[in-house]
Image (tube, rainbow, N blue to C red; front, top):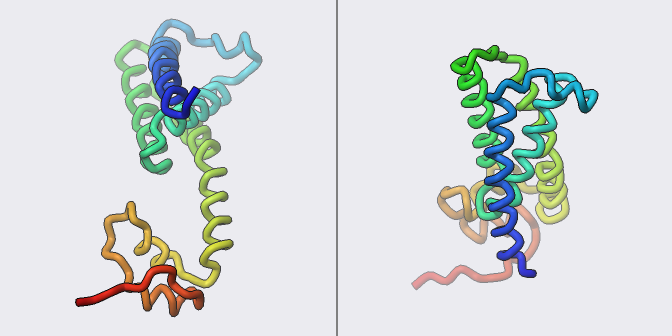
Length: 160
């Protein structure tokens, strides 16, 4: 089993789960969460915790915050669709979805902060973002980074 194969299998599983979750959230299954001794809000938070972790697993090349926003958009769509199917639209349910999403997102954010503290403890966050290859921001000059971190830069910048 390779990581690529595992992600492929997880994507298939996620597709099946997404169809099932959509059916549970839109179908005539109100009160089903009580069979598991959960309140409606706890069920929403757990479901969207699982949705968010599932997205993290099946889309490793996307940023976690972008995937979390996608999960929140799914929550908004579900709430709107519930209004069309005769069920209630609830802002509190959407907030519970957000709690589940944040619970899935928080450990990654804490780990990223730990990484920055270990690797660049004295560099401000604006400079860290400017160095991020994914941000699309203009790269920061190597001499500036070296001055901020007080550590030698691994590769010298050559000009012709």
